[in-house]
Length: 434
Image 1 (cartoon, one colour):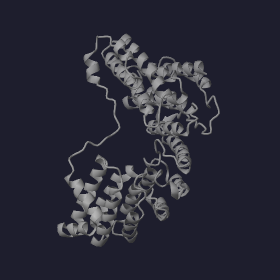
Image 2 (spheres, rainbow, N blue to C red):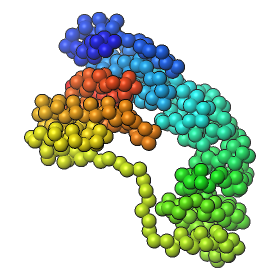
Image 3 (cartoon, one colour):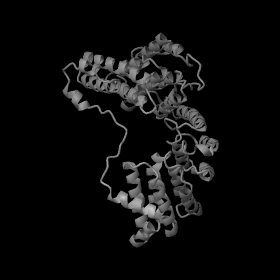
Image 4 (spheres, rainbow, N blue to C red):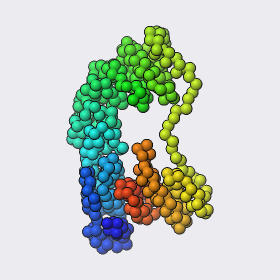
């Protein structure tokens, strides 16, 4: 199978003008279906003869056939399959919108199934508003009310792109969820904006949301979202509602562990209350609830604290450019796999764009080998797919055909597909396959 896919990649290159006959021969060698069984079947992307009344350019053919190969690979993990379908659709959309819609529709089906199982989709077709409105309506109808938090970004995208078909359904889902003390604050805000913040639905559900706040410890990550929701709407509700809801939210925040995000959320709520009620009424409100008043005053007087965010491994292309002409391979091999992949890709890009192709090839050997390590040891907290994309895109900027071969030779088929699509995205953006 690898030999056949490698032949097809060579055929793509020949199809860029070197040998038209090889193109038709290669079509027969293209694997149409995954080599091993998967619960999430592949979607075949046909090569269109024309796009917008024009014959496809060589680079467009490269993009479409690369997408074709990527979606034909098996991804047993539905999260990976969803990522591949979503990316493939985005890449091929400017060339063949019809085929992109097929991929988006299949992605929406997998996304719906993940949400039904209570999982958070790694990427969302629905959030981008790419699925057609019939699919969007079917999607929101199938979201269990207990899964509105997992589906939150998807519901927002559905309401934004297909309001007439989805707004009432989403509103009912969120209402039913609130009855079970399940609140999705950003989705509620999107519906309130669509209904109008002064509508009866918005006014009622604003108060109801703060009457139905979830467990504070299990939902501490949502503190900022609840605070933002309150700050956005509090000036448009009655002063009495703003007061009661604000005090309940402060009490809820006070039950969470003390950290920078909690302090930030408390100060957002207190500031919004002060603006909505006026200074004197705000102070009176704090005096009426000793706990909420203490929480607000302590946060206001707290020393600035550093908000902990997930660490990001940075790679300096400028530093790599300065190292051009010097072999840094030994230094790179001593780095952890994640940093090694990114730093080696940066040095490969710098050397390749400076004309040092042999040195660039050595760096990309290191980078793609590190990608295999990152992928095999990946965890939910680490975005291994982003590393695959970053390394593949850097290689494609230097030599897109070679980058495609490297991506195809990654150990995992899901990583292969993600890398191949990253190469196709570079070629699509640049308009030329090197």
